[in-house]
Structures are given as C-alpha cells and as structure tokens.
Picture 1 (cartoon, one colour):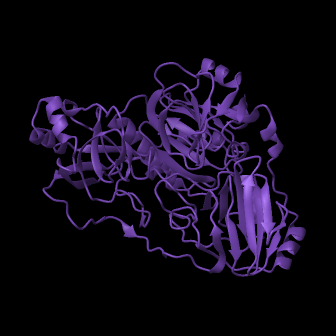
Picture 2 (cartoon, helix red, strand yellow; picture 1 turned 90 degrees about the horizontal axis):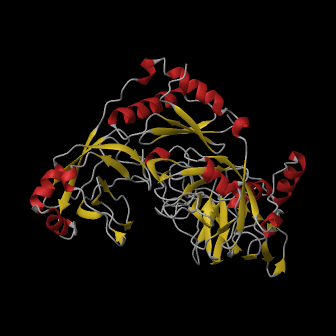
Picture 3 (cartoon, helix red, strand yellow; picture 1 turned 180 degrees about the horizontal axis):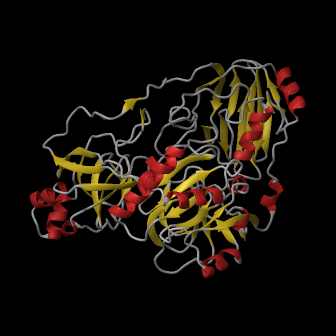
Amino acid sequence: MENQNYEFSLLGDTALCVKLGDRISEDINNMVLNLCDALESLCLPGVSEIQPSYTSLAVHFDSNVISPSYIRKLISSLQSQTHMLSFRKPTVVEIPVCYGGDYGPDLQWASQYLGISEEEIINRHSSRLYRVYMIGFTPGFPYLGGLDETISLPRLDQPREKVPKGSIGIASNQTGIYPWDTPGGWRIIGRTNYELFSPEMDPPSLLEPGDYVKFVPVHRLPEQQVWQRKEINHLPKIGLGVNGLTVSDPGLLTLVVDQGRFGYRKFGVPVSGAADMRSFTLANVLCGNNPDAAALELTVKGPTLVAETDLTVAVTGAPCSIKIDGRPAPADAALLLREGQTIEIGQTTLGLRAYLGVSGGIEVPHVLNSKSTYLRAGFGGYFGRPLKHKDTIKVGPLPTHGSILEKAKSTRVKTSRIDFRMLKAPAVPLRIITGPESTDSMLATLLTNIYQVRTESDRMGIRLEGPKLSEGKADIISAPVVPGTIQVSSDGQPMMLLADSQTTGGYKRAATVISHDLPLAAQLKPGNKVRFKSVDPIHVL
C-alpha cells in the first residue's frame, strides 16, 4: 500500500514530483534526501537525475526509456525497504565572515532597527548551526534554515542592482549567501570570500543538501580558500580542433549550445542547452553530426561569419535570410562553405531563434559535461559569453561535403520541423499537463483565455499578460521546476519557463508545456498570443 505522505504529480512529461510533507522541517528534509540517495543508487535507465528540495524531489526521466508509472511504483516499494533509506552523515562547513563595514552595509541599520548592538547581532547570527535544505535559484545558492528569529529583518524596499558575490544576507526568517554578483533585496550584514560554486570543481558546489553551515566571525578574510573534500576538474581553457569560422559581425545574441547540462540540478545548475531542440537537432542532422554536437543559437539577428576551412553548414529554425558571398542560400539544407567564403544570416521574420550547425561540431571545452553557454553565471560555451567581433570558432574533425550528402541519403533521417506558420495564428496553441498546485478555477482561467507574450522575456522564461490565474498569495515552499513549467507570479500572471530557467521556484506551478511543444514556445516573440490546451496525463501516468 502506498504511503499517504507521498504525493505524486507531474511536471509535464519529463519529470515526476514526489512530495513528502507540507512544512519545512529537518525530519521531512532527511526523508527527501534519503529517498534521493536510494533512487540515485539504483542507476535507473532513462533517469537523468534526481533533484531534492525542501519537502519534495523530482525524478527527471526520458519517457522513451522509462515510464513515470514505473518510477511511482518503484518509489512506493522502497517505503517497505527501510534499509534502503538509511540516514546520511551530515557535514559541517565552517565559513569565515567579515561582518559590518563595507562588507556588511546593513549591519548598522539592523542594530538601530532591532534595538540591539552590532556585536550582539553578530553573536546571534554566528552562534547557530544552519541547515542546507536545498540548493537552487542560482548555481550554488544555499537555502539555509535555523536563523534566530530575534534578528529577523525585512527585505529592502528597493532591491540593490548589484550585491557582491559572497555577501551574507538576512530576509525575514532566512539567511543566505550570494554565490554570484547579482541584484538582491536582502539586508547584507557581512561577506565571505569562500567560493560557493565553481564550474571547475566536481561536484561544483561547496555545499550540498543536508550539510550544515557554521559562520565564523573574522577580522579579515583569509587569502586562501580550499575545498577540502573536492577534486579539481582540470579543464582546457581553449577549444580543441582547428579554426573553422571567424566572427565578422556577431549578430544580436549568438551563443554556443548543445543538448543541455544534466546531473547538476541538485546544485542549482540549469539545463540550458538549445531553446528550440527540434531546430537544433535538424541542424546537426543536416551536417552529418551526432545529435548532441554543439552548434550556434542565433536570436533575432544572426551573425556574419568567414570560413577558415571548407565546411558544411546548415541554418534551421526561425525563417531568416541566408547569403553566401552575397548570394541567397536555402535554409534547412546542407550548404558547402569554402575557405574564405562569408555566410551572412539576417533577421528572423517568423519566430525568434535560428540555429547554425557546422560539420564536425563546434569545439569548446566541456563544462559540467556540456558545451552550452549559461549566461547568468558566465560559464560554458565560448568563455561563458555571446560571440564577439573577431572571435575564432574551432570545429571538430570534418567529413567531406559529399560524404555528408551521401550519409543523409542512406540514413533517410526524418527530423520533425516546426511549422512556423503557426506563429501567424491569432493565438499559438500549446499543450499542457496540469501542475502540482493547479486548481479547477486556475486551470479554467488558463484554458479559456488568450495570453500575450510580454517584452520582458528571455532564455530564462516568457512573461505572459492576460486574466489573472489567482488572487492573493502565490508563494509555495520552493520546489523543483523544469523548462515549460508555467508559474503563477505574485501579480497573478503566468510565467512560462525556458531553457535557462532556475531549477527551483517559490511560485505555484499551474501547468507545464509538454516537451513536444516546448520548441514552438521558445520561438514566441513579444506580442505573440498563445492559448493553452490541456492534455490528459493518463497516457503519461
């Protein structure tokens, strides 16, 4: 019989959520982490990773290999095998902190607000042992529990545009550490120079769920930072291969992408990868590459590139003009680009993103098992940034153009293309599966209305405008999200997550766009309108 404390729900057709409780507690979080450990030890085929959070976990799966109903039955069977769910041994990580002054600009204000001395605030903050319940929001960001409520502080009325990396903050009954320079509204009382996250380490996070943090006051920060339990992952700083293309004009936003970065969501690392996976895959197929070879993702306006050697290239995705040495060239076709020739990719007409595949694939270092660019943290791809003028792109081993054409004939690979004419429709149809926090009224509103894409949208997600999905509080205990998840923001409007979305979220999850429709969603421009259609999850569960 299934444990009634386990609640199962879907995040689209790629993840199964298991909820073990309704409150934040160490006992429930231990249950989550122990179940996570047990599932990881089974090395289930078709399961890419297990992602824990405060009170739940997500099992990310490939439905072509394993069904969520099988995973659900397996988890239920583990409940009777208590030896599989033994408690892990926690690790206590001491983190040196310089409190106050330039490092803690809000400490003096906090003293006046609370009516206690700065020294007493430091004493109360550093005397606690803080539990790392989960890591999410950004890579390496620890959700810490255990703050003394007598030093609880309100958030800033106006968030700072930049909070320095390593800052220690308090917001309400939470304390935390900023792993990156980022905007933030927490009250900053100190700073550490410990690296909370480094893509050159494996695992990449100093802290892991279930660890404990002890803040140690110091008068000055130590010069050396050592991760005593980590192994350095030595990565080449430059790409391998030979020079393939030189950037004459980088276009608006041109990134190196691949299929994505898997296995690191538990450390807050997004999947990233191509936003439109179907067009990306087609570009590789046309170039004779493996489906996971790195390619270029072009947004709105493509680049102008000069060939440094003979190459086969293919441009797929959003329709746009393509010229080789000034002469028009077709899309969705293998094109021979001779050494010295220039390919110019213009502005997209329908859709937002196009893809340039290159025979041999683009060669940049693997960072956390992927070549994809993650812009927010500045790693992966081409030195963690968009392409610039005069950049040189290296490529892998190149087959001849003739052999690529022959391979295409012999394999007769059929790759699903997006029908970009759908973007001309009064409202683009997207299919969804109901989310964990959806209600009948929320779903009815979502399904019976048309929503418009707002301008403040990017690779992280699409903000939509239309009838509100809910009134009042939209917060939940932070839990896993996936690309395609439709969250309900604090103003009641839906937000549809994309490739670079955070791994966890604290807003209600109303629904998730199915994986087949996600590439079309990634092609939506500001002003496009969408309507949603519910898919019966019975074929999934």
